[in-house]
Amino acid sequence: MKGNILVAGASGRTGQLIVEGLCQMGIKPHVLVRDVSKAKEIFSEDLVYHHGDVRDYDSLLMPMTGIDLVISAVGSRSPVGKNCPKHVDFEGTCNLVRAARSKGVTRFILISSIAVTNPNHPMNCFGQVLEWKYKGEEFLRESGMDYVIIRPGGLTSCFADVQNLRIDQGDQVSGVVSRQSLAAVVLHAIQHPEPSRVSFELVSVDQPDENNWPTDYESLSPD
Image (cartoon, rainbow, N blue to C red; front, side, top):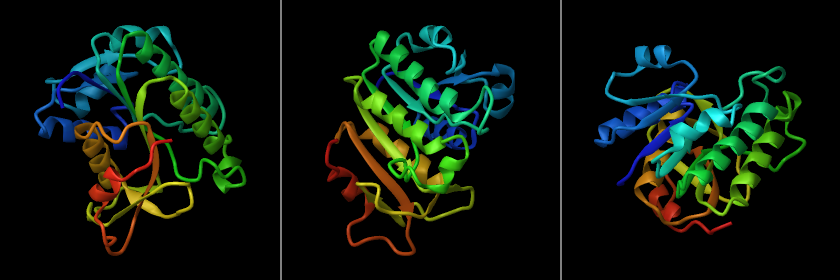
């Protein structure tokens, strides 16, 4: 992968794994964080740090300058208040997409969530988080940008075999997936520009499917 990569939400648990993976690939990522000092305690100095807040469109313009690919690992942490799903998962995603598009970014990878098309899912009892995530997805789809939308199952921090994964489309599966596995799929998407404009679900399985997940990834149907 050539070009500059910006990771939004880099200091979160999934974002950290993505940044570490990029560094292991020999890529020096740009990281977008609200607290640069705190981020520097997590990562080494050898990154490109940008202060920005996805809720503030203007704060995203300078960090997007010269970027080729944006990865959003941003997610709300509270059902109400300034960090609620509406402000972070929807408006924040829209701000990232708008800023990226205005600066000529060509590709966007968004981490969303499984079950976003199910309005009756219990997670919608907490600030309608899935509904707002889905609206953020829709804004990206309609942006005209090349994109990949990953809908992971319930995220866990336990170690898992990154080969034992299932990729599916249509929002019909359920389950959990480790952050480590999610990061591995994000890194795979970075290295494979095709397929493009796809959305898919990602869950762990006890045994790998007959076709391993990289093969399933190549066979994804565009939205």
